[in-house]
Image (tube, rainbow, N blue to C red; front, top):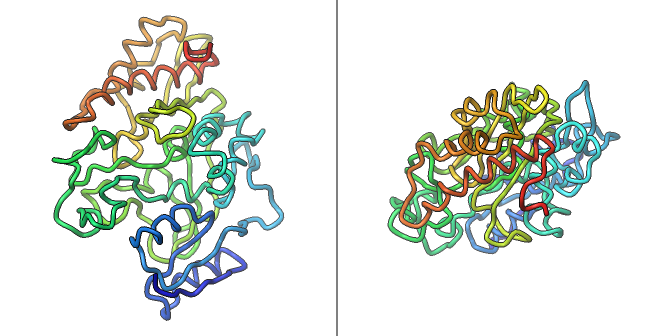
Length: 333
């Protein structure tokens, strides 16, 4: 590992300035540092500067999570554990806390941050292994196409078949999340515009410009919202599929819905067909609810080993919908 400078900015503006310093050729941000350390250990990155933003706040005297004008405001450096435990989140947008409350392990949740969760790199084993010069690292081949693709994408069409690793991003999608940034002339960006597919840039997953830093995140209130992930090992594992749902209800009848899937595409994957199918459905009519959620797999193009995701996704969507509506699912008993 090559030596690198360690920068301790006092504000997010100073952090952005450090990223723009010409004396550094490859500066990187570090908050919780989980993903950064993994990349360093695997030899996937060789930064010449780490800019530590772990203790920064956009409002120095503010809480990590707060209510602001009826919206939820989350500091970029708020931990996943803080989000999951927040009374503001539980009251205004429970999908956010549910999405990160079972992510990874308790140790990771106590360190990993909101912005870090959004911007973490893909967990694809070909990308993570230094001996594979895969497409995402500048090579010519996505090895998942003819290799082991059990955990890879069923939507998106490639040319790289990663799945987006963030649990928080789909949850923010159904709450109209916005990331607030410094370091350029733009001050904010809707979460729906933060990420791009591999066909629009193979080496990165987001549209942040060099020098831009996320300071905090805001989102609309979504008190009727829920999240459900299906994992091989529910206690500690990456999701096989996940679903975030927010609802507007008229009694038991769904007036409107927002539905976004995780772990099935290179970006958080909106499911507009499911949203349309759920309109007018009673959450107490299980047969109608199942029919509406069954369209979640429409348009999927699974590979050799991941067709099971097409069957699992409607299950996750239905359970997230029931949670959003305040109903127990059969796995709650």
